Length: 553
Image 1 (tube, helix red, strand yellow):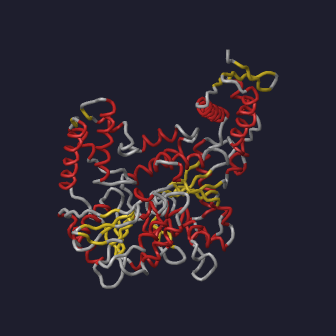
Image 2 (cartoon, rainbow, N blue to C red):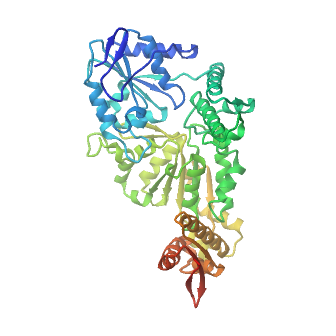
C-alpha cells in the first residue's frame, strides 16, 4: 500500500518504484504545472504525457512528484516488470492508500507491445479498467506516434485523458545536461573527451528518429565513452561514436542511398535513382506537401525483377530493419467488403472491437515503415479509393473515427500491368530502347489506373526484364549469401563458373525474372551439398549435372 511514512512513500508491489521529486528546469515549468493540475482535478481523469523517447517523459514524473509534495508518486515501467505488466497493474491497483497515490505507467507503448509482433491485449484491458477505479490518480507516458495506436484499442481512455506534451529542450538546457554528463563520464572513466565529439553528440536526430534530445545526446556520449574505455583509449574521439550503435543519420543524400540500394538490387538503377531522389528530399524535410506520406511510389514491371526486393531494401536502409516492411497482397482485397479489414467494421458489427486484426492497427504500430501494396491493380475500387484519400491527406481513419498519421510512412504500390506486352513485343514494345520501353510502360500504367491515382504518385518507377548477365549476377549473390550462412556452421564450399550458369539458366523464364533462382539454389545446390555433408567441398559440372567433391583432406 502506498503511504507516507515520516515523509517517505513505500509500496509493497514488486517492480514498482517511488518517483524521486526533482525541480523542473525553466523550460518545463508550464507543462509541469499543467500536469499537476491534471492530477488534482476533482473529476477522475487520467493524464497522458506524450513525447518521443529521449525527450524527458520519465523526467516529467519527477517534476510531477516535486509539484505534489504531499502525495506519493509511484512508477511502473518495462525496465521494472518486463512483459508482466498486466499482472503488475492488477496488483498495483489493489494497493491504494488513504492519501490517494499517483500511479505512473511509463512507456505504455513498450509495455503494450506496440512495436512487437503481438500486442499485449491483457495489459491494455487492465489499463482501460483503471480509469473506472477510484482511490488513485493515473498518469501514462507514451510516444506521440503511438497515441493513435492506443486510441484504436481503447478510445475511451485516450479521449477522456488530459494530454500533456513534453516540452522541447532549449539549446542552453541541452548544453547544461551534456556538460553535466561529460563531467560524470570523465570522473568515472578517467578519460578526456574531444570538442569535436561533443559537437557531434549535439547533432539533431535522423529524419525518422527513435530517440531525440536530451536522451539521444546522453546516449551518444555514454556509448562513445564506454567504447573508448573498453579499448583502453584515454581520449574519446569521433571514431568511438562512429563505431557505436549511436551514430547519427544513416543516409547523407540521394547518392548515398542509391549506392546502398544498388548493392541490394541488381539491374534496376533507373528505378532506384527515382526513388532515392524523392526520399532524400523528404528526409531533408524539403518536400512542399509535408502533410502527405514521405513517399508514394508505383513500381511497374514484370514479376521477379526486384520490386519487392527494393521495397525490403528501403525498409532496411531507411527505416533500419526489414521488420519495418508491411506487405499487403492486394488480391486479397478484391471484394467490396474487404475495405472493413483495413479500417475495421462499422461500430456494432462483428469484429468492431477487435482492432488487432485490422490493417490500420498494423500501420499504427509501425509509424515509420514501408507499406507495400502488392499488385495494387487487383484491389477493389473502394479499397483503392481508401488509399487514394490517405495518399492525399496523410491520414487513415478507422471505422470508429480514430485517425492514424501516415506522414512518416512510405507507400509502394506494385503492378505487372503492361509487362507481358513489353516482354513479348506486343503494343510496339519489342524492339524499343530502354528509354522508349520506360515511356510506353508509364503510358500504359497511366491509362490503366487513370489520373486520380497517377496524380497522387510521387514517382512511377519502371523495372526492366532481367538480362542473362543480370540473372547471373543475382545467382552469384545468392550463392555468396549461402556460403556466408554455411560458413558460420563450419561448412565451406566453392563453385565453378559453370555451376553458377546452370543455376541461373535452369527453369529460367523471361516472364518470371529471377524467381526460379532461390528454388534452384535450394533444391539443386543445397541438396547436393548436404548429400556429401563434409566441411570443405567443391562443386563443378559434369554431364549436365552438379558434382560435389570432398576437399576435407
